[in-house]
Image (cartoon, rainbow over all chains, first blue to last red; front, top):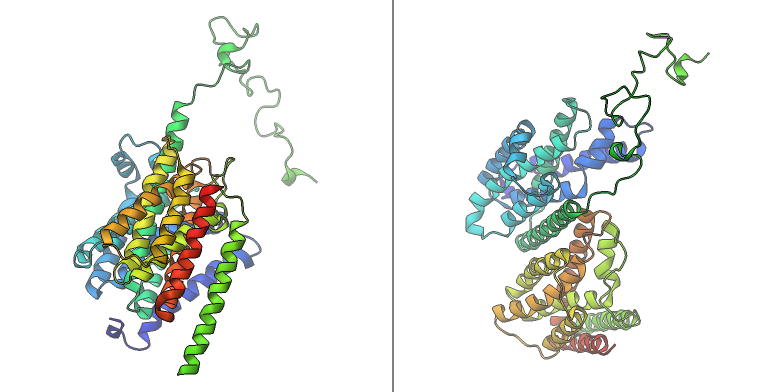
Length: 266
Length: 204
């Protein structure tokens, strides 16, 4: 199958992988100052629970035929775009599941693992379907983990990183492919399903436990338990009454001191 | 050729000695399915759990060794099935379903798998899968019981499944290597040593 590439083109995958790994190492360990986007990529986009299903998917694509590889990559890109664009819709599909956001990566692991474990004759259909679902879940994960409040640079950078990961690993597996890779792929598939089920089970158990926890006891700081405030006007809930700071401020406007500001110090 | 054979025989004898030594060292650890009573950590904690407990290590190593000894499909079907069935026990542990005799089950798994290897028992594939299924539930329960308390359940699950799979692969590698020497007798000796380990865990 690797014979479909010219000798030089065969090494695109490993080269892509090497360049990406070096770039990540530079961002993680060499750069003296990292932006929020750098941190997000290193800690969230490349988190183990997010990377493992993507690597599994890339292995499945690398072991498949050329047509399935192309269809799988296209399905992954389509799913990724759908996941990034329709966060609310996809979370709504989770229905009454406890902590649906926490179940995104376990679900991706299970879907990809089943794609790897499936019988060989069904893989032509299974792998692109798994790629579509995994892409959607990956897009959703990127949206849910975005700390920027809708800065478009974050989803674009995240999508670029995950596409690089899938493409680099799939093309590398394709070049280095050996006969025993099929068995190794199945073993990896069973690991992914096991990881997904255990992780998902733990997330659900934790969410159910939190839901069943008794409400916190009333403390003097809670509004209902607080003694009535004599300064509160009649008819106003003393727990919600706070004086308007601007109304009682003798220096309204820009001249009002805002605490210690290093920029304003001489 | 003959010299090569002698060399590989010496190498395998060294390997068996090393593995036996490791097994004996493992026996000096506390003999219990080491269900962590406090909170578990993340990846390192999950990865260390099967590796640092001789009970889990021996059972998972034996699964790989037995599969390699049987040859054919069981070489990969046993290590593929083990984590999948382990999940059933794991989820029971996560949900806190009461189960008795987990530690005895783990000790019995070592004994039974060791004996199967020692006697070169080659049951039908479904029989082998059914046997390891029972034991995989015990091992999974021990892992799952501590998973919800883990600081990072995702990393913990990833760590212990990777460690479990790695031990299976080591077992397969050792098994396939030993099968070529003395018609697999060394595998059987190793199986007997594993069964002895199972006896030790059973009585302590």
